[in-house]
Image (cartoon, rainbow, N blue to C red; front, top):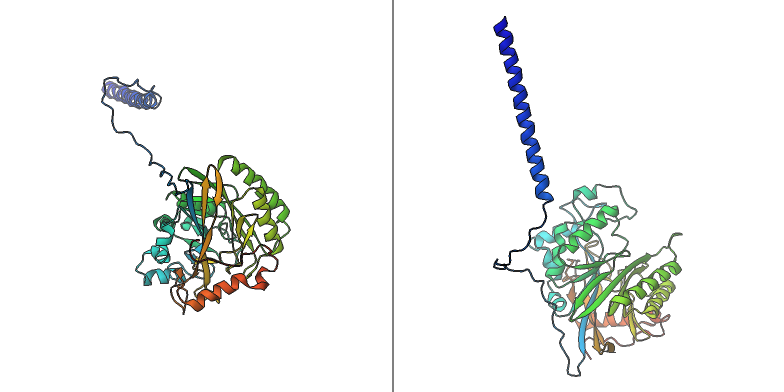
Length: 396
């Protein structure tokens, strides 16, 4: 019996020693990790050979024109909606997914007929109308829209790969999946290096030594009691004034008006004029899915609606005409000394029988004439005394 108790006590002592040893090892490891994390930065060795230093890519040098001015070319297009509609389509079998398969699975197909145009300027701006997110976001509570568009976050690369350097994200579909959808879309786009803007975030793009500020707002009809055009005007005026403090050019985007309108409403004209009066150099509009006239108000262009660009929400819309807007700011000694513009009439599809989402410049004279007549139609311009009467297709 004595031998049993002696052996039992020995085992207890051995177990205690092991526990102490293990605890000591854990404590030592914990102390070591803490020491590594909080160790002071060692002083540089003066005799060490310096290694390579990461240098950010240089900003392109300004290109001087013959008169000593700098020319900045800006392109603007309307709504870009890629992905599927969760309210009416099944993932993988929607309109966009079917066309994507026809085009060999490469989402870049949507811009293949305008890529050269987008890459030939200093800045291309599109309105990105939809959400880029995975299943963890799209299962969230249903939104207010009858259509809710979502695409693979990998689609964001399509923008920069085809010369689209900036997008506006303030529209009536960006919030279809709540704040999580907005953040997912912003993260996907920002990860590619594309500049983005919404009501809470000013996008800033730099080119040829100039900073371009991009502001974006949304007010579509029918207006509800919480939407007040006068309040939006005050917000935009304040934001434009702040942007002018740090930017050389300020561009303002409005997602506004009513779907299928070919002319702006009174509150759109008020907001556009207020933006110019506050210091905006260019105002861009969209939402109606139809082209609207351009007004030159106090020497600044207000493009009331750029219509669609690549719109996967309908494969047979009753009007597939649109246009690309381009303007050139000629700047000398800090002043704009010239600001010509041109348009490139387009169809939102490369086909006439259905919408394949490939925006394509028009070549047929009758179709081009249809676009021009819509832009200059008296019924569409009667509220715009400064509406453009001519729409050049070549630089002047």
